[in-house]
Image (cartoon, rainbow, N blue to C red; front, side, top):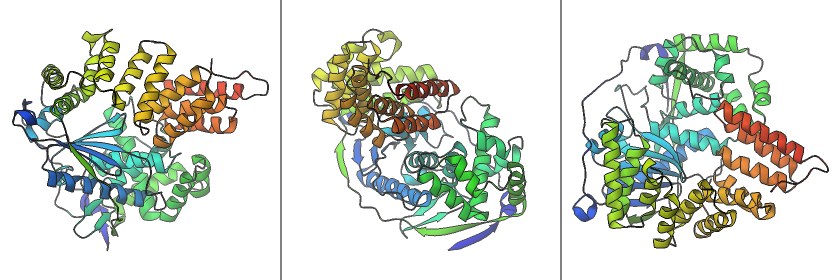
Length: 509
């Protein structure tokens, strides 16, 4: 069903605010009478939660349905079984969540070895914020925005920032009704619309040429992101065929500038800016319903051990040290207590030892911690990856580093970080032929990672695959958000070009 709504009717909706202090409670582990924790793994998600098992199964079903729906909207022809994985931690205790992340934080995200890690509160209906009961306005969702950004890195290998951020904010308001098997698409993102109308110092040209949102003032960042969303929202409603042609070109790996010239190139950024502004003042939008794609979910479950529960609570506290309602020192003290409890239950707890190893007071002890982890848990890939990391940081012998990462990959071939580190270490010892399949597999698992593609490019160059190497490094550069990193990666690109000249010496020394 399509619904045509005047944009002007939505401008008077006011935001909701709330505020109260919260404390960070110390909760018992399952063995101490606390809520049991479980881990569910599906096709694309790992969910760790102390929700009931029924709620947890409903939550992971909702996650897979959300991903499938968003991928279908983003790129209908995308392969259903991409290698993307995401981790979600959902806390059942509202006070615990508020203490860690804050009452007005509706989700927290950070990058982890397994992919994006989302921290959320409660079952799916608690994962988003709705400011109004109007059915024409979508809810805000850190989870949906993060999923959209992650999927875009897989499905659209050369998307510019304006498209990535704009489409993610467009997909943020997708609303699922799994009872009917339907999703509503195209609802207004009220937060983005407010920022667009309020911050008028950002132009279309600014959005089209932006390569990063890092290091900007809050107002500048909000204005740029709102303009990115405004571009996409206007295109979806006014020029959908041009937008889909541009998207399809990106999906094929075409140059973004050439794709832009072939679709929207006849309209100047200034003219486009005026048209978008007029649209949001006087235009209308169309929300429509689609069927939620069917997913054949593979599901496994296990109970988390007491050591894992305590280590996970510590990880959540350390991943957001300055946020939440609790004092930063109190949060760190809480994390240290939880790590101590984890090690009391399992002296070789990999996650607890890894977290402790990088604390300032443990400088110089990292290798000892990692060796303890592999001694106690020799069949745990994460323990061997931990050992490889600390050996690398401590400039250990390259052979020992290779052995650690090779064992991690042998135990779990889906760990892209271990694959990438193994490929790099092999390259540095002149073993490019052995490194190549490792680097290629890492890039398949993490095509959104600039360091992974940088390794692949250098391995390809050392293997004589020069055109592929240059393409991989250019792709890595396109993913960067730091000017300093761009300069470093461009230097590497120039070295690759020099290496690929006839008669040039080979890399790997």
